[in-house]
Length: 165
Image (tube, rainbow, N blue to C red; front, side, top):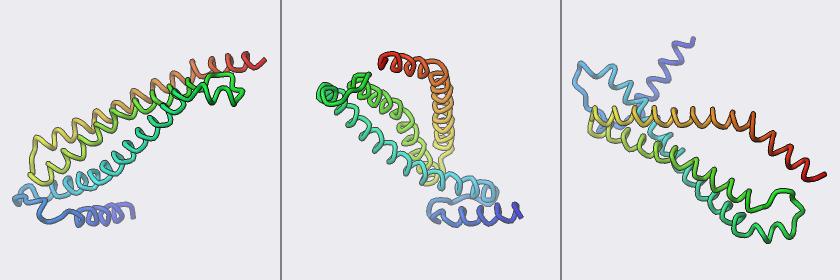
């Protein structure tokens, strides 16, 4: 059952590649056609997530600047233990963390397009290298955020709790 699903999925993905994008000789056709189908599919998703990342960076930077610059106005109105400009700085830092993945995603879909259009092995290597770098970045970021959530965030919560006493 699962094998039948995979074959149907493979055929569906292979059929999505425009004919002009893959011209292989007969010895390469089987493996390369499937590989290019997956590269083509991944390229579309990378373009989509690249756009989402850029929008996220822009909105986070705008909110960060509003909170950082207008923090004194918000602090006068609200009765928050932490200064509002600090939240703005956190938003700006988070926006900065999203820049590197966005760059990697752009490189990935550009290399994927170059691989498919020109049948370029160097572009395929670049595609895989940037893909590895993207996931390595996410892995390191995940480890760092887990470490912060275990150590720093409880400490900040305790300090905010003590400040409200």
